[in-house]
Image (cartoon, rainbow, N blue to C red; front, side):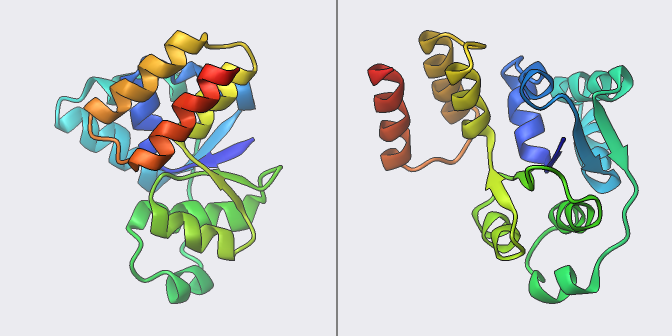
Amino acid sequence: MIVSNSSPLMYLAKLGEIELLKKLFKKVVVPDEVYEEVVLKGKEGGFLDSLIIEKAVKDGWLQVKKVRSDADVLRFAPELDAGEVEVLCLARKIKPRPDLLLIDDASARAIAESFGFSVKGTLYVISMAFRKGLLTKNEAKEHIDKLVLVGFRISQEIYLQLIKELESA
């Protein structure tokens, strides 16, 4: 079981690969603030990925948990948005194994790591799916390129490193 923030869910849904989370981690938990952000507000905005994420919740492998804000998180992370704060609060409450959180935002990742969590993101899911044989090399490369096209922020250095790792596999 892992805890996820909104962007990995949205990007994987945009790629048509949200099921990778189920295949890799069996169960994913999100706080209700993340659900509201990606599903309820997403549907209001007419985003298709919100329907895909909603289906994952209905299927039961993506679970939504209510969580109260933790004073420690609020004190150490005033710049985080409400979803990121709730992800950290939920993770501190349920202690996912292996203490893994899915977060793409750099500042939220750094704060989560300061609380002792291992933090990965969307690119990790794609890379791990490739290593486990769930994606071909070409599919993984296409997904990384598509992420860049839909606005995923990645440095040129990390992009080239990922492509090199895929090429050498």
